[in-house]
Length: 378
Image 1 (cartoon, rainbow, N blue to C red):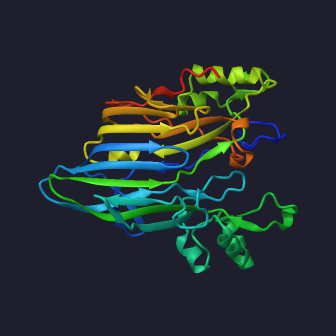
Image 2 (image 1 turned 180 degrees about the vertical axis):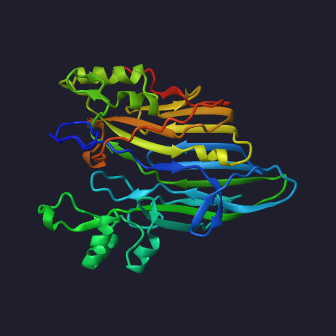
């Protein structure tokens, strides 16, 4: 049996402790300040429409930005990538590890492909250590062989200093803890940005796509092993974060009855940062369309939405007007073991983080109702 890791759920040895996949983000306005990008609110540019498609293989976003001002606006549009942290206790699925464009991000504006600039910084304990890494010839990206090889070459004095400051850490899985090698422990923050011109009174089309980073665990986290039914310490968190409802819960209980007391499902997670849409003028998206594809008709999906309709065997869609992005989007996809090759299952040994509950406020269109396979029975 695996032992508890922090607040981690105790699972069988065949299970991995779940870790949340990194969040993906909306475009947001930014300006260049010394030391990096700083987000700013703009009242001139509003989102006339956003069409968002999310699956495990691809995220596609099509925007219509409108300049409501009487003069042209030249600014910087920024796309923050998910943070990358080389924690030994959990793994994250990175489509292209070890390279700068690890999500294969592409963007076009009014049909013209753009080559965005990349801003990358390294942080430890919320302090910027980018310059120190570069001075020591250590890559900013903590994932991959290059960073691992670079930290192994550091002088002992440097290693002691960086260990004390959390920039590197000992490999906790080494056979001899006293002689364990050091591994990267800093966090890399990446942002793609590009200059854009928004003509007065005009609408500009921006489209981008990328491969999402999909987290997961080989098992069900919201399960009570003693009672052999849906429950456990993560159930309420899942009900909030993914709007888990009675249909999904019944499906898991029914699956357990057919599988010696445990549902033969495993989890995948996709997160998308919607709230940066509030940085644009008006704070609402005039027309918002969300389409989620769960991959296989046999999969189950759960997420928070409003008036979501099933439009195909694997697709669900929400259409809203005057939409305020009051919370980010988290998607839970449940798959049966026998329907998925073992090589495709994620192993991520860490407990989910508690969701941040945003302060309540009046919102034109909330996303707080169960969506997806709400009538699932297995």
